[in-house]
Length: 405
Image 1 (tube, one colour):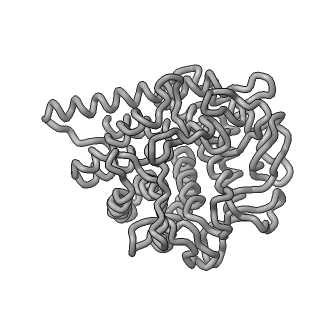
Image 2 (image 1 turned 90 degrees about the vertical axis):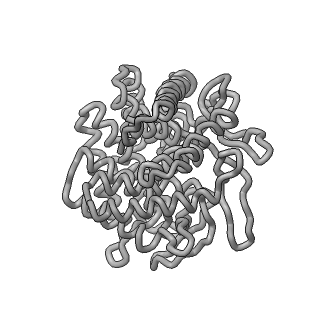
Image 3 (image 1 turned 30 degrees about the vertical axis):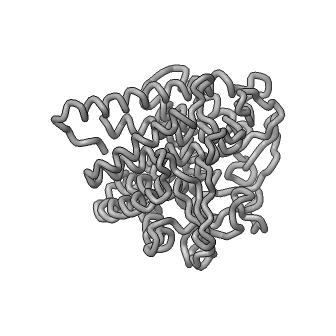
């Protein structure tokens, strides 16, 4: 979706500047990853690089990290055919094939050690979804048939093992050989429930990206079903926030609110409806996008930054501003402006970028820090790692560039 034309010269200049800064930032982020994360000794990419840009050559390497690297460099190449981007994407592609794809049971391992040997062979569906996301984007960049074939095989695995037949939706995790697993959690901070908003959001994201290169009728039907699941079970009509954790019967098991996921889902679900060309869903999720964006505004601080999470049961606000919600706020509020014409949404998008430049981006060495605390001191976690990947920030740059047109 692009911004409508405007005759206001100052307004046009503002948008042009925003777009130019996104182009420059995309280049800078990718340069950082090429300079600081490539593991020349063991192959692929380091499992972690700290906030001082020092790699840990012994750190485990995660499926999410490598899949997101694959997506980011493939998407950047599709935006601008810079040969080094395709080269880096190809490096990620081969590392995933050689070390993560499970040749015996199907799917992909959750993690490997620094040498590439299996560390945790469980099948975390969230990770499989990101592997589809990266592989399908790489296919667009390279026309490599193996990438498309792997995407289809991962889709089949998720549908065969994770999808519920009676109650629909997708169960979180399994053992390496697809048996029931006791600990379903994506991370230690999550609730141990069978179904989560987060995994469903990234399944539909991956399926929609796959549909662009493989417009299969069954795949489309699953995207339609996932949109219905969000409409029926995950978007909370009372609060217009997202229900984060649910049991197998779709009973809500948490009241926690995640502002970053609210604003991310607002534009991402709307885009999924657009990709499959479902006019009814596009209209419905246009309205939902606006509602979610308005709910996310309640998480904005006066400085333009988006707080992390809020627990309404005891009115506890986690007073941290992580990098990824700021990136999603840029896109989500911009999308809400496109849908409504309400300039406050555009200001929220641009204010998010201003906040990033002032507090989140490492203006000396490149990339973005994990985030900041309430007093703006830096959260000393990885710049690159198991969860800190070139995904939210590169995607925000590409989305804003496209939307300004």
